[in-house]
Length: 392
Image 1 (tube, one colour):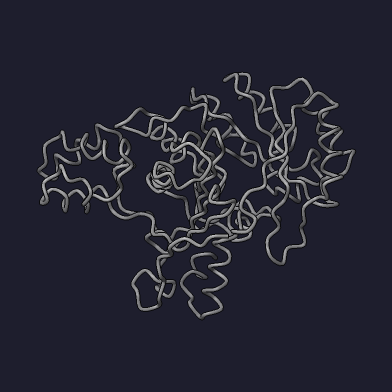
Image 2 (image 1 turned 45 degrees about the vertical axis):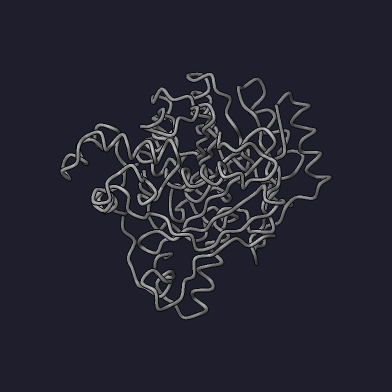
């Protein structure tokens, strides 16, 4: 494990863990606005409209997040634009790397003291960013570190996009070993339930996929939006005319167990959730990714593999089995490899496309929410009450 430079959080600093703040949305940022709104904003500051394209080109086209590095802007303009359109949204608290530099995780402190995480993963043919859409999560899945923190608040459009722009800059610097120097994929699988922050997540997707300089210019087909199964929001996404991949965090094929593992199942049962997902696949032609965390002696029985195969046989779906990355002190553990292999065998025998997710970042608390949970624990142990209040 490599520990990268860390922004100190000493207790005498305004943004330190001891500063008591209540959750609140951040100030307006360039990435919250489309190009027309940016032009209106710069004109209201007494700047010519073309400044909007200039700063957009820097931010989205060149991945420059610091206005002082935008040297083609007059010095007087930079100060006005920083205050109004480029406020600091994310401050790194901890940055870690493992897998020989191919996996890099960042813990961010937001303007109100909330904590979120993002991960950059490099492969020989691609670089993927995993980003958060909420600080904490309200879905209360018992095996998930984020779910145990509870929900602090939704992230703004710009707080989501700024994670991606930062990580794209890291990729462009060549810091991700063994991977191309360009971010090509984004997965909304970090902290939070993306479809519970629906309007902002959809607008963030549009920023990420609109060509530069208005957006980052990624392919919609290279964006994955996950959900635990908020059926009305899945129907709403189906009508958006987007070509993103929908990932359904299923984790159990039967209602009895899924009611426990994914509490929202008490509102929308397995059959209803799958029907909504299959409707999305039919409308978009995009294969659904069924996310299934294998948990020892909980959801890894052969009969559950057979039931899952029966539910998915002949459908436009792919199962992504996830070896559980247990959180410290948790009763949940990963399934043994022989059990995992048998689960895979039964699904494939049923004709269901199945892979096992590459395990990344175990040395750096790779599961979403683990770094934030650790930071909150340290803050509480040190008597700093601010983050404890934010996490409640």
